[in-house]
Each structure stands twice: as C-alpha cells, then as structure tokens.
Length: 243
Image 1 (cartoon, rainbow, N blue to C red):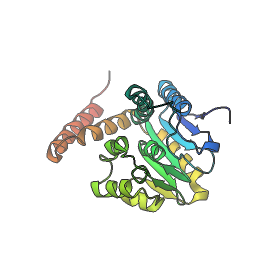
Image 2: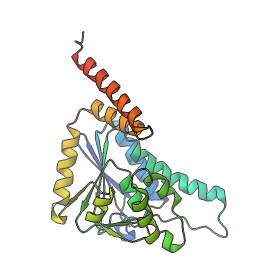
Image 3: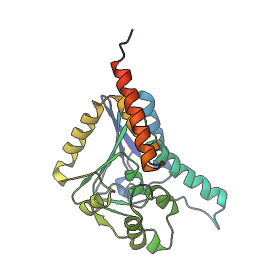
Image 4: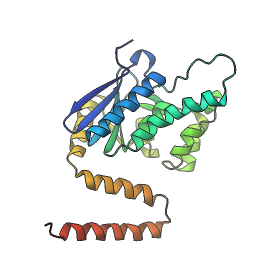
C-alpha cells in the first residue's frame, strides 16, 4: 500500500486532501476516515480558507469498507463504526471555509456521500455517481438523512431504489453536482476554482453559509425577513466608520 492514506497539500490559503488508496478504490475504512478527519481538523486549525477533496487513481471513492467482525456484530460495534463515518462527514460539512470535492471516475455509496457534503462538487464529464445499497439489500438511511435536504424526494428515491450510476451531467441536473468539466481540464478547473474562492472575504463566506443553513429550516417568508434583517445589519456595519 501507499504510505499515507490521505496526502495533504498546502498552497497558500488552500488545503487539498487527496484520498490515497487507489489500490482499494479509495474505499473509506477506519484508517482512511481517521486520517481524513485529522487532515480536515488541522486545515481548519491552520485557518485554511478552502478545503479541496481529491483522490488518487482511477476512481474517487468506491464506498465504505467496514471492519471485519467475528460472529454477530453488536450495536455498540456498529454504532462506533458509523460514528467514525459521520464524524468525518461532519468535519467536512462544518469546515469554517469553503469546501470543494473534485470527482473523477466513480464515486459510489459513502464516496458519493462524502463528495456531496462539500459546498461545491466539480466532476469530470466521464465521472459517475451512485448509491448502490438498496439493490444489495441495505436501506442507506444515513445517506438518505442528509440528501433528503439536498435533492428532491423523487430524484433521491430514483437514485436510491435503482442504485444506478448516473453520469456527471445527469447528476448535475439532479442537483448532486455543481459543475461538469472535460476530463482533461478537471485539474486546471479545480485549481482555478479553489484559488478564486480563497480570495473571497472569509467573514462574508461564513455569514452566507450560516444563513443558508438557517434559512433552509424556516418557512420561505420568515427566511426572507431574516435575510433582509441580516443584509441591513451588514450594510450598517460597512457604513459605520471604525475608530
């Protein structure tokens, strides 16, 4: 195996985490998840403005690889395993700056879920994403609990019930992918996007991410009123001379 399960590359205000187990399809086992959680935490601690998730090898991530368990698994063992998965996912979701996943090849199951936790998902045109659990006899309730807030009910059910791998352009139409680029331009486009995002005012980024999270839980008119109040406060603050 390669030396590090996650390679970390720092470039100015951008930190890139590269899933680095191509021989396993970058499947998310305990070692990979712990390394990813540590890398994301350290990037946040360093004050990185942009976190980029990429992967080595032909695929982004082929899903989760659970531990080998002798006999019947106990609820305690399974809860600990999924706490590890969710812990890494939440660190990506809660990253104080902006997050970008860069997907090539296949992103399946927990791999597609991880990529979808980022603020933006840039995919190669040949990339394919899918959630294959239901046809294999597993109801992916963890995936559903998150993506029910991201995708429409019909689109989500279609993806989950069929387990089919969708091309990047269809995934974009469904709302799972932000941007689709030609394969040969993926690296350049991802780097340019990260550099552009890193130049944004981090306080403005923090405010808009926080507001979107709050607004999603409110009735539309309440959200609009809150949006007006927040914007007025910003304009007053910007117009007030500092001493």
